Image 1 (tube, one colour):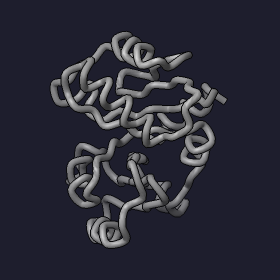
Image 2 (cartoon, rainbow, N blue to C red):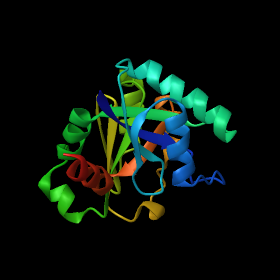
Image 3 (spheres, rainbow, N blue to C red):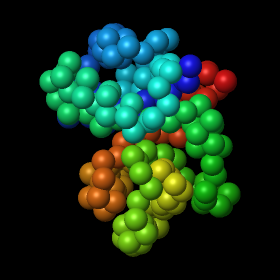
Length: 178
């Protein structure tokens, strides 16, 4: 059995409130085992004997859409992938020293180079980005709410759905499940 970490977009934001117990039950109804949620922002940990992550993402999206009545994008990572993400430090020590927020955005697939170049054009003295594989690391020098950058801007720039989590959340998940 493989342990997966599912990061859901559009859960408990934008008027789509879902209790974590309901989310857990939805995943169990899809046939997954050892289902747990991690904080109330659409993070679900589960085990499955299926190994095709794209097929799993599609299965979960279809099941949640049917069960909850609205569209949810799902981004799966294995424990090894999540550990590498939590350990990634793509910015300089000096940049980190002055930052207020460090986030990671999950993507379904690595973006095309042209879209990465467009994202890089959005960098400024407040927001820095680094794309590594299927993740975008975002270092923000002010509170996120003070930045003009958002998940919506990221999705439009990269032409695909994304969901953003604070790096501290990812690091806490890795620590809990190691």
